Length: 362
Image 1 (cartoon, rainbow, N blue to C red):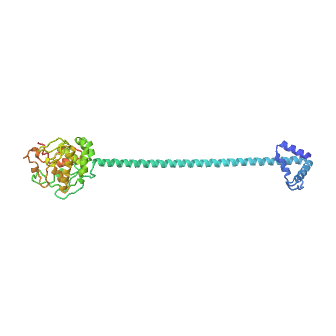
Image 2: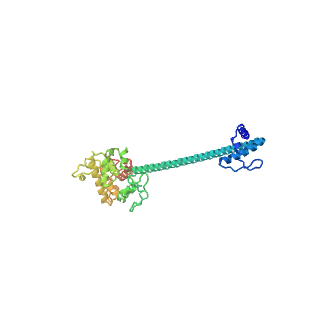
Image 3: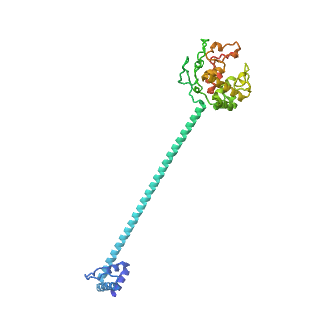
């Protein structure tokens, strides 16, 4: 038909295929005549199209106008759809951007949290390591400087004539008036009464520290023998080393004025059947002798140590100790206990502690 051709040309000219469809989709013609209902049946659809074509062929101006209006509506709808699509796309992009930003923030927060936790863990580990090191150093220092675990006679009180040991940093095991309790140059016949001090009360350095020091250098190579004697008798190795330094400067070849043997200066009667010139044997024999004296004297370490030098508890006096009847060197050294416990046992040269110095003229 002519209108079909007209309409088709108009659609091609306007470039809008959807415009023609909108004219055929109307329920009625512009003049009010109702069109048959849309149907999938081909004949029904042809009849609708024929009515539309006939009407617009008779009214070409209306055809142009309605086609232009339909095309404008289609363009508006298209633009609206495009805008909506863009809006949705932008909204989607914004949501994705916000989600990505939030995820990044969460990841950053987690990273920061992990970093903080790691830092705290490292700090705690460092503190723990530092505390462990301080504890180890303290323990080592305590072991080196105080092998007995005792603080000495600080704050202690004893029964008898001398109750206050007068302990100080210089004399941790009691001052000489306490150690020589009862002995007096002003009262030369006053008898010595040894305060009841135990081995466990004494402050002494470790045998290893002693062996590493210049003071005990002569004893260093015998450290193993002294440690073995300690293990056998319970007498601290450093106390045995102190006896050896005091008696012979740790010389295994020394012979005393009355025939005393070796570094521990043992009298021959203590060496029956054994070779006391052997250093290890000499040390072990001296340790056993001292331990016997310690036990026999009620575990009074002052009385036992005094006996090692010929002191007798309740008998020694200033006059008896300084008697030169048997020669100058036969005197009892009245600085002996002070030199032993506050000198050698503290890592200091005992010979330097001279108060009575009654052997100084020999």
